[in-house]
Image (tube, rainbow, N blue to C red):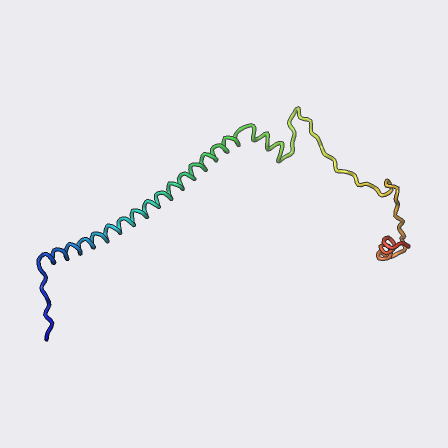
Length: 127
């Protein structure tokens, strides 16, 4: 017995067409929403980059203003080049002189004829 297709009524056709149109429109709407979200993320990224660049520009302007001032020249003269300005009293720190063993009162006898290892042996274990 051959299978006979049932005919759809007008109401069923309208529902089917409506569902298909809603699916097509829904896909387009979702695509637009994802594109909008991506564009908004890119806008936020660019706004952050602009804010960072503006902050850097402000810092560079402040640094340029400082470099063009006399305080910068004074600081560089004193720190980098170790110069003193007129009216300053320069102070030079001298290195400490090494302490001689003879000042402590103990003098280590040195035998010029012995080998270095013998001198060490005598130093640690006695002659």
